[in-house]
Length: 425
Image (cartoon, rainbow, N blue to C red):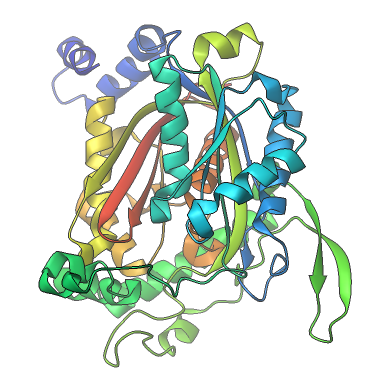
């Protein structure tokens, strides 16, 4: 792929970077990079993302949310679950990374016992890591098709218990930094790299405005599975409802309102509840397979996984992870920032999102065009899968061949990124 870019450069007039990009992507790329061994995305859906402890999913167990998306993805494409070689589910807060939750969701979905399931916890990237795990099994030849999912109920489980840790961790700076509150790492990024409160609040406002605009115009309707569930009101009354809209979006957000919020983690800090991601509940599922198997079954191709990367960064600056993971993934794909049409970068905190965007020189109009976690919410184990769903539906909505990136920072100091190609209608 790198050689193709060099050749296309030789064929273009000096300085004609846009011509080189179009030639490689539209002509050479369409023919040369298509392979029967490609890992392709067939379909992906998500639930609405709802406010933890106050939203529509506050009383819904994660297995029910997960089952809703698992069933819907398979039903939409008319594929029997016995065709799946494996299922992997990202989860952070449930015991054992949600191993029991995932298998129960499997059976609630009516899937046969012969299909295996596993879970993975790479914290905020767990949903994306589930996709990486299934993609790896496809590339190795172990399976032809698999389901990659993510789920989290931050209403029913909290982040308070770090587990059983050695008292020696205090003797090692990096180990000690791994238990630093995430909000403090946000303050560290803001201070070290000079990300002002004004920039953070402006970014947060933009996220809310973009998400509100997308919701009001129906952009999310194609990616959200309506979920019938029950909720217990404050007076103890239980009622049934169907959840089909993200309920964390604050359409009335103003810059003056954000400016009035107090710092949440340091008295003189700049990270607030308004420029941080929301605690949320939600689930997402993505069906992927080897291109040859997908085409043999007559299934559609929504996207192609072109590259994936996970990197390590200092734990006390964990938010900078995308600034290093994205270049690593782009290098694998033989692409540059300029080649990417949409970046879905998780907004754990505005401080780190602003830093990563500026550090990489990403045009702001390409970043989270329908809002991000500040507006939509961040259900930890779900987010990576949710971002893939949102990205590919957005690229399809635009109606032409394009590239997109999904990326996020990861607690304890990591970053993950994936490059996808939408092949066009």
